Length: 137
Image (cartoon, rainbow, N blue to C red; front, side, top):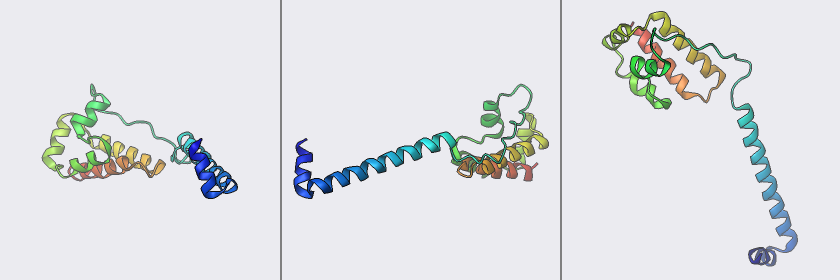
């Protein structure tokens, strides 16, 4: 209360009311924008989500991503992996059950995910990774 009284004497009561009103409106607008973003996100509703492609028989999605492909997590994970992809790395993936068709489906899946949400940089980087794998198949 003392702080408000000091501000009122400094700016004048009318100016203080306007300042507080603007701050409350800005806070309300920010809160409304955050709520809309959470509700709608940045996903393009015109691009349907594709079904998740298959993984080698007996392999969970987690094992596939971590052990077979090694795409890591977050955007940097796939970028880190790209530099180590060569025909020997792809041969090991093939031994673990990866097929060219499966690699193509995963590339297309992540390409579609990036089309649905251009902020999904992880998906874009995984497209590049899958292309490198396909180039070495």
